[in-house]
Image (cartoon, rainbow, N blue to C red; front, top):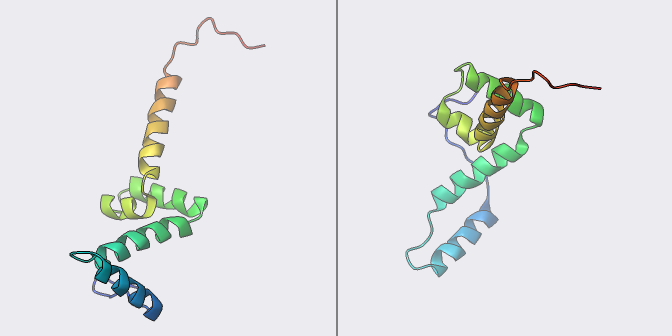
Length: 102
């Protein structure tokens, strides 16, 4: 199991060369660490199944995941679920007297 002190490492010689080329083309270079962070976030979100996302959201709601970790794993899905929940709660409070169903 990974700990907070573990480094994330991989062999990526072609990726390293590609970043060096782009870094050299730009005045002031590029922030390779930030690109790696963003890419890792995107790939983590893409790798999760819908079932895993639901499990992670439930863990977040129960306080088992920090806001920061939930944001990394679920991204905009947290806001979407909260909006849908609010809309559902508002709709369930509507007065339905006089509404007939056939």
